[in-house]
Length: 380
Image 1 (cartoon, rainbow, N blue to C red):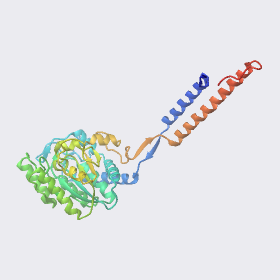
Image 2: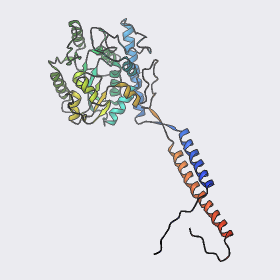
Image 3: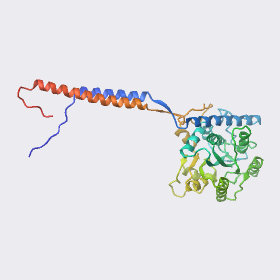
Image 4: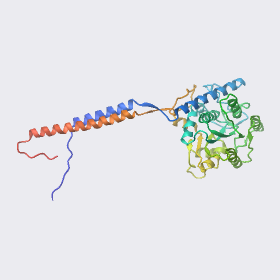
């Protein structure tokens, strides 16, 4: 029985080296000459970030006008978005690195991207849970909502964690009024709670609770006055439904870690920072406004664990100086030049074909010259 063999034609080492050198040069050229590509919704992101910057400047101007000092040690960029550490309205501890990172106005572009990814369009209704803990992120959210021309229904937690909106005479609700009076934002929170433990200021001093209630009264918002954490969640959901008046809520935006909104510190960590379309796949998910919305198939945008969000969208951590508008991967990303990559691939393929054919042809020619007359053809 005859055996069949297939033997590949031998290629010279010189041809292989040439192909390897060309491939390395092509790969190096693609790596060395990337192009910056604008990301989707670039103009909207830029407009939102510019508006956020203007809002922060207006708040800073108002704070200085009220004689409220800006501590350059904790707010080196002098954004005006960092408050005192401990005051009577401080509900819990926060992290200064997260607060500093949040003062970047380009977070407004992040909110725009998350809303667009969630499928939100102009004129859509969105529910919002503001937190006194992150006034800068509240501002970024307001700017994104204004830029995209959405219809917000907002509820605020008035107290704050350390370095949030903790100036007792100028809380987040007061900042909202500043923005509205300046013509920068066309809406404000329509309801509020004290925030803190159980969303009702449990554990705070009598003075602190009185200051929070006074802030709600002077702002003219509805004080939901929850009797428990479960009641706070239920009252918030009922308020959103009532104000939506039959319109579908297309997204829920949570800022920070308000207990009713996220379900205490446990729920805060169970949801991923950014866009969530499904409930967390873990046991014992804490009840919260976020959980109830996502169970209704309403996309939830969770603005928490700020440093992770900043890294994901290419924003600097703990900036010590003012960050220019339009900076970050959320606006532009360095990507491979597709045409250069295609050209390099075609060049490598063409060189391989040309060199191998030339090399094999040359070998056949030389073997033919050396073969004696009448000798059989070589097996290939």
